[in-house]
Image (cartoon, rainbow, N blue to C red; front, top):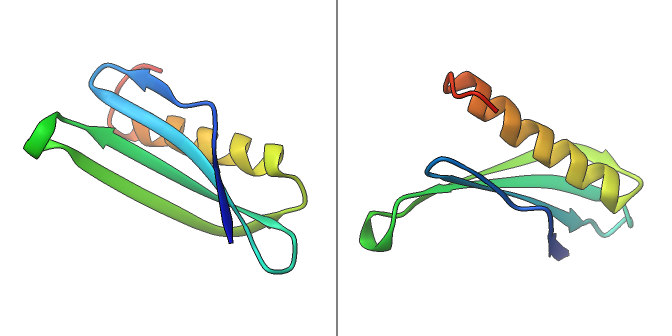
Length: 78
């Protein structure tokens, strides 16, 4: 599997990084990293989604939207 990082964005103390992984069948899955803190206080939550996409760009957009949804659940304006 290969990974691709693109389109990271910050909101307040959070760094949201959408990622993709290419599966053996050539399709892509979405991953989102949600990081906050500094140094030894850094926390990074990684969410991997099972839905597979034909294009890498679509998988990245899905991961970014899930990161924004996470911010909404934390009651933070996006």
